[in-house]
Image 1: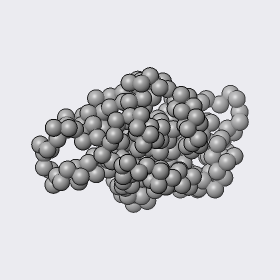
Image 2 (image 1 turned 120 degrees about the horizontal axis):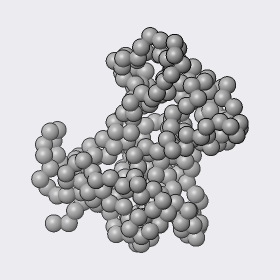
Image 3 (image 1 turned 90 degrees about the horizontal axis):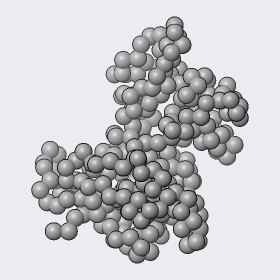
Image 4 (image 1 turned 90 degrees about the vertical axis):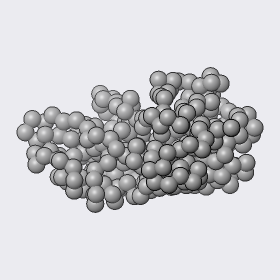
Length: 266
């Protein structure tokens, strides 16, 4: 029996390219695509998503959500991997990241289960699922085997030996604009270039990030165990966001953290 084919749509460069390649008939058809919304993308990402919904006629794009990530962080549990600093030693680390799994991965799986008509806790004995992932050749190290036995991660861009720059070229050659960066604007994994982009081109979202940074400073969480001498920061420098000198060339660039397990922003 033919597997169910589902595109995990992040609405970034790679998954947008996949969606449009499928629409152009260059990649095997899918049954539907799923975009998991944290409620904290920039407005141009939502506008781009609306474009894809209207453009892709051969399959439906389902927009799902596990809730408001930021609201839930303050009211329930800290899902976001904020940077921590011990005020006594100045040492710190990252809070365990749970946002990708709970707000990006699980909602996709839940929508697949819903499509298959599976009840809560019911095992899938209907058919296997090919989950189409927007990971390109230059990100080959991000390939993984799905932990769910009946879901197979499939990587068409890697199979076709297409990297991120080739995705951009394909989009341009087919008269499509390059999609905006798709991820939560306040993400602690933001690279220096991402913060600079927000500061210069999205000042409203940068100001929102500054406000979030101030609000979390001495926040101890509702159920997390944040020690009394721990301060939380949005930026990896563990400095208030409005005091960070992004243009300083000596500043460390944490671009290697600007990833979310192949789910956010691809």
